[in-house]
Image 1 (cartoon, each protein chain N blue to C red):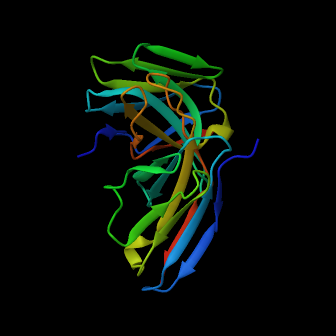
Image 2: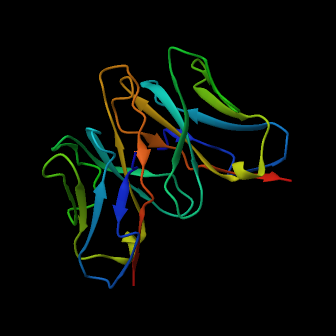
Length: 117
Length: 113
């Protein structure tokens, strides 16, 4: 059983450049989440998908952030025109939501570190 | 406004003793709660969860207690081991776990040998 896989694990980019992170969820998990974590804080929710449908995107930090899950499997998170404040760990997670009141344990990947210089 | 609060940034416990990590929440719609452990430079690892229909859930050395009237939950680790040293996050969800998790800021646990 492979866990949630994220790529790249580390990315250093210059301010103004675009970056893209990829996430491969646990196979057959229907939900995929993106979170961001900065130093001293808990993970902060950004967006999530159920299969290929993006159910919530209002928490994306600005219009420079976008996410896709084109075939309901892997997902990408893109940050355009990066700023130094975007430096953080970007976490992907997945779950297999079965139905109401069945709980929903989400499993995280190792994270992708972004440093904007 | 923080909906999930972990008011102790850090906790030190001797090996073999009990570790108690606390979490408070403000949103009365939350009905599913989880604890995660995180090592540096790694993603959070799921530990244990509890639904609001229960007040206790055990898994090995880990027990989570939920007090709905106080909007408070706690994680007990007995006995504590040096490998338990990590940051612990409390997280909450609504509608039977159907909404994305909201996390606290974490508590750093140090277990001293």
